[in-house]
Length: 268
Length: 90
Image (tube, rainbow over all chains, first blue to last red; front, side):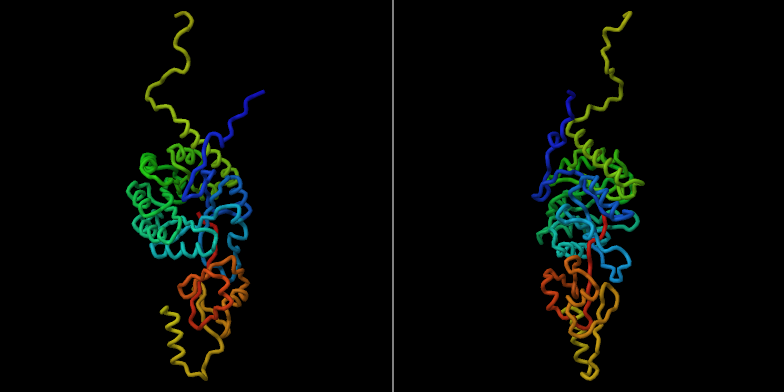
């Protein structure tokens, strides 16, 4: 009988954000899919528990789709409302309050965009909005730059989780500054979830190899030619990267070291 | 006092009773809409074929957290409504 591979649950432990326990370290967005059926299939394949949604005006003439709640079961997934598209602390706070009034939970993925072209976060406004919303009882997951000081300030402002970017939203450039992400992870007490910039499975593995608690992505899956296959690849890559981190990689050496014995060679 | 309410009071004070409008002018999601006087928010949502459980409403910049109150909220001329829901996003 051959030995079966160890089950993932025995190799990793659940993690906690804001008092809630999570098993999947992959969180996914719901934007940019070709169809709702494709979105659901990709989310299922990803194994994600946390699924992000955006708050927008209802189209009163409704020639288009009817809103995501007709397709996603809030009992099955933890719906995490984001404040994407907000450019000021005030707007962000308004959107967060609207999202909470929907009645599912008090969680919000806080995003305050500082620049239209790069979609980089306005960290000062994010810290301000985090302080206000945390005081109102929100569980704020704060999207931010890969900057230690902003991350520390967000933790101080009451964020339950800090979400530095790997690279700009929708860029698919992967992790641009591994050092910065590792530094943030080492210095924060709250969980660190890398959000934005993952383009393919290897990017996700590299993110997780830094030791962060999880990764959130949308376009990396939704904009793949086959999103369901890519969602599966991302799930495996997140697990692979996490296990590689826990396993502890070998040191890097800029010289070769043979893997086979150097003794016992013929004619020597 | 919210601007919408102030505008309503101003209009009531300056409009002779004989010219009481037969419809109320609202702004809903940025667009003008009219309803009959006495229309409740619940009735207005029904006229738009919207399920109240699927949307969140801001009435003159105040978020309505109690859906039970929609039936007793009678819309007034000049009211501004934002009706939002969850859509796909990252």
